[in-house]
Image 1 (cartoon, rainbow, N blue to C red):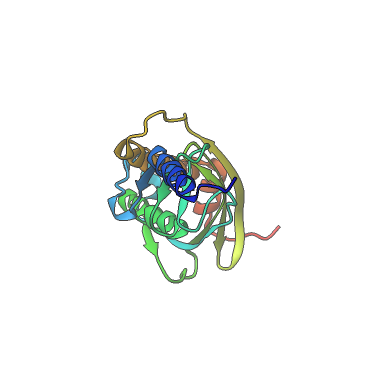
Image 2: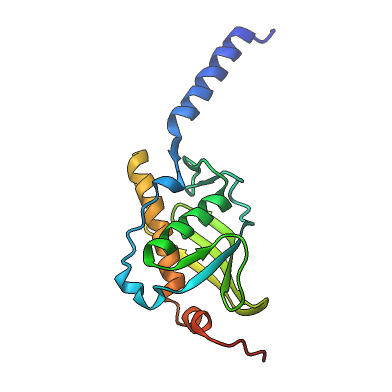
Length: 190
């Protein structure tokens, strides 16, 4: 019996449409990100300066442009993820009152490097390295979790992704070890 190619084609199209209909795309745009971080909470940082260095994506569960929920039924993204993170950090830090250098750290200004190792819509693993005058003064791995979101509404999920970015930034700025390194006036090599 020969296969019925017309039936196979119709079945394949229906299957593909069904899979597409089950997935949700959440567009992210750093220009739409507006931090809800209270500048008053981080007043000790106001007037300070930082250079945002490299933002690298080494997460094997993402693509260059997207990350997903755990069952991959929701896709988040649009711009390059490392660029999206950099621009969100830039926006939030400026809103808090921290001066941000984009191209090179002047002497005495801390350089923040960020490396992403895992990201889905409810968990992230990343590393922060802080350098001052080419010397590494801080290095730490972070693992953060948020509650899972049952909604499939793209607007709700988009806003949640931006609040996740706030959580990432506040976790770093609240970290006592990060603060000690950031506010250290002189670099001491041990």
